[in-house]
Structures are given as structure tokens and as C-alpha cells.
Image (cartoon, rainbow, N blue to C red; front, top):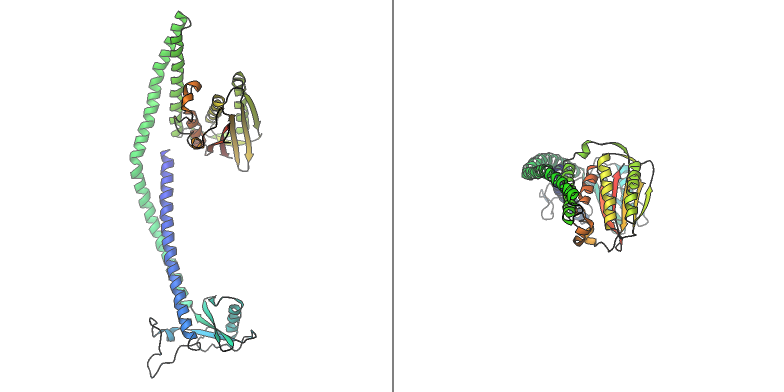
Length: 408
């Protein structure tokens, strides 16, 4: 259980860190890309106001540029344009301000931009802008390859730094998780040892009390007080055995004794063993088991879980009520269902708590059924040890059931 807690805590912490770093990297790169686009659009918009070019310098001074634009931009920028006639024909392209793009390439880029309905966008690594120039439409292209290369370099560097940083954070987090959970682990281990040791210590006096009560019953004959002693010692013995078994399941003993088992045969065997008690209690038992289902598991633990689920169904079903046991293969899972009629509806809020130790949806029936509310906790521990999912369900009326889904 502590190992599962460590794993879940580690996964949660590592997942949160990964999500936070991923959002930071994504945010920084979106901001960087947005700045690239805004800078390109600003340059194109300024050029479109000057007939698709930068203004010529006046007597050695730089041309009039918008605020915030570097005077070097007109000399660093590479661009070309194509003019489209009103009938959609592409006229002679202008490529004097770029060497990497020839006439044919300019015409190809112009056709691609013309086919798009957007006023601005990217064709490859060229940002384009469409605007009216007289009766024609002009498409102005700005070379953004250097900006894209810088953005790509920033993106890759950010990923590399983030990966290294996450690796360091993972090591630090895992180290502190172990230290934080160490007191919890020690306390839990002490609790398990206490339950196991106390269980074994309690068994001896209970056996002596039960034996002496049996001798008294032989000497005195039937006696109400002696009968009560025998009944209560049996209940305490059963409770002690359940607590010890629950502690053993939490330690993972069952998971260390796994082998390939015929689940269908085990289920049928449990049903046959239960037919006698069900008939004696005047309950109808319906069994439906699909043949040929196998899984890796612990046979003793699985049979204990079957007994718990069937005994629970018998305890809480009314006289002449029905109990059903089914096993069905569904894809890569095998679903075991145990359902029973109930004298009264099971509250919705109780379904998520029926596997809690000592929890009872109807505490008033404790003495009537003779249970302690710990059986389903043992069943859940068995399911967890086998990697199965177990849950309770109800039809909201007078039907309650437990479903266990095994991976096969």
C-alpha cells in the first residue's frame, strides 16, 4: 500500500511539474512566434504604404521609418512581390530585392498565396500581405527565414534546457517524496505488525475460552450464557482472522504467489459450494459462467474473495430473494458480478464507501447479520493485488451488486 502511495504521489508530482514546464515552454514559444509574426506584419504594412518597398534615404539620411523600427531593417530585409490583374492573372513579379527567389519561384509563391482567402499568412517561410494597388492586387512577400531559424534555435534550446531541468527536478522530488513519506511508512509498518502480532496473541486466549465453553456446555447441558460465549468467541475469531488476512494482503503476499489459474472453473466451484447455504437460507441462486477464462492470480485469495462476495449477498438479501453470480469475458477483461436483492434501497452515497473498513450502510443490522463490515475490504485488497478494478453498483431500487474486472 505504501509502495502504491509512493508511486501515485511520484506520478502526481512529476506530472504536475511536467505540465507546468510544458506550459511555460509553450507560452514562451507562442510569445516568441507572435513577436515574429507581428514584426513581419508591421514591416509589410509599412512597405504596403510605400508602394511595396522601403522609402529611399534622403541625402544620406535613412528614410522615414515607423517608431521602433531599426534603421537597419531596410538594408537587412529581403522581399519580393507579384501583381495580380483584376481578371486574376499574375503579372510580372518584382524580385530585385532578393537573390534566393527567381521569377518562376515568385510566380509559384504568388499562385499559392492567391489561392488562399486570407489577407495575410505564410507560404513556406515567407510572410505575405495582399493589398489593393489601383485596380490590381499586389502580394508582398517578406523573407522570414532568419527569424524562423532563430525561433527554431530558441525552441530547441528551450526544450533541451527544460528536459535537463525536469530531470534534475525529478531526482529532487523523488528524493524528498521518500523522506516525506518515511514517517508514514514507518507508522504503517508498525500498524501492520501490531495487527499481525495482536491477532496471533488474541487467537490463543480465544481458543482457550472456546474450549472451556465447550466443556461447560458438556457438563451443564444447553445453557444460554455458554452459548453466547461460544457465539461471541467465534465472531471474535473470525474478526481476528480477517484483520490478519487484510494485513497480509496489504503486505502484498498474494501478489508474490501468482500462477496461471482457470478463473471459470474457480468461479463455478465457488458457486457450487454456495448452493447448499443459499438453499438452506431460502435464496434463489442463478449462475452464468463463461468457459475458458484464465488469468494469473493467487487461487487461495481469489476463492476467499468469491466466498466474501457470495456471503455478503446472502446476508443482505431478503428471504426468498435472488442472488446471481456471473463471469463474462469482455475484450481484454473478465468481469465477475455478484448481485442480490435488498430489503431496502442502498443509498447512492454508500456505494463508494462499502469497501471502507468497518463501514456498514445499515449499522442497525450489525447484530442481525453477524458481520463487522470488513469483508468487502478484504475483497478489495484481493482485487488490488490482482490489478483488478472493483466497484459497487445499485439500480436505485432493491438490487445491489459488486463488479470485479480482471485484466486477462
